[in-house]
Each structure stands twice: as C-alpha cells, then as structure tokens.
Amino acid sequence: MPAQQGEPRPLATPDGLGLFNAAPADAAHELLLACCHSRRWAERVAAHRPYPTLDALLAAADEAGYDLSAADREEALAAESSAAPHPDAPPAAHTALRAAHAAYESRFGHAFVISLDGVRPGERLDQVLAGIRSRLANEPEEERVVAADELRRLARGRLAHHVGAAAWPLLPPNATHPSGMR
Image (cartoon, rainbow, N blue to C red):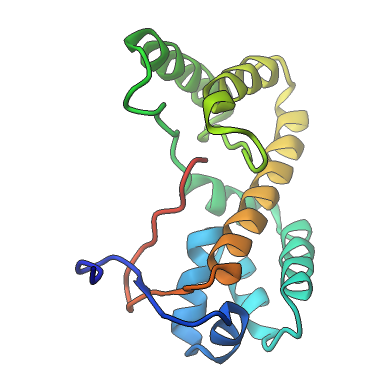
C-alpha cells in the first residue's frame, strides 16, 4: 500500500544504514528531527555521515545528546507531546493519564518523556503512570537530568527503529514523522 501524502515512504531495501548514509542532507535531517527535535543534535549527527555501523551511528547520537545545551534540550522537549493510552484502555486509564500528564507539565513546563524500549505493550500504561508519579517528586534540576536522559534514550530508540529497519522511511521534504510513544 503506498504511503499517503505527508507520510514517510518506505524504501524496499534491507540496508537502512546505507540509505541513511546516502540520503540527501535534507532527508537525513528530517529523519533525525523526527527522532529528536533539536536542530543542533540533528545537524551534528547528520554531519558525521557516513557511519560504518548502526552501533557507530547510535554512539554518535548518544554523544550528541550528552552535549546538548539547556536551550537545545528545551527545543527538543517542546516538540514532544504526552502520549495517550491505547484506545482500548478503560476510561479510568485515560482520565488517570491525562491528570498525571497535566500535573507533570504544570510542575516542569514540558511533556513527560520516557523511553519504553523493552517494555511489553500491556505494561506500558502502568510504566508511564508509575514514572510520572515517581518523577513528580523530583526537584526541577534533578528532573531536567532525568528528562534529558530519557530524551536521549527516546532518540536512540527511534533512530535504531528507523535506520535499522529493513524499510527505512525516507521522509518527503517538509514532512513530519510520527515518533511513537513518548
């Protein structure tokens, strides 16, 4: 089935890293921004292409994430949004999650971010709720550190998914890519 306008177009090839390395600069930049919406992070990761292995790319993404300034982190966090529970979740879960997200955003000024890599789908809602409740007790500076780490983990997971996938999504110019659970 072809992608609809504004959606990523998968390329039928097993070499996602090769496609990323050879992609036009604007396409690589758009993919990177879909992983972490910091222009500085995306520029830095894109500038070091070609990467010999996926592990080298992910290591460079991690390093760029550690080097983000407070303004770069704020830029990336501002682009994140609170994830909704699965549509089949009971209404009480939707209410609890909305309330928890609102409390977090009120306290810290940005969406709650958490990497759910390795968490089974049926456990994600509980993990998010527990994470928000736990992190609401953090002092703002402590939470900035935790959120930055989660943002790096999210970027790494998204990048591994997009570039490591058998069909790397080459984004059309000016398109945004859905980046999954935040």
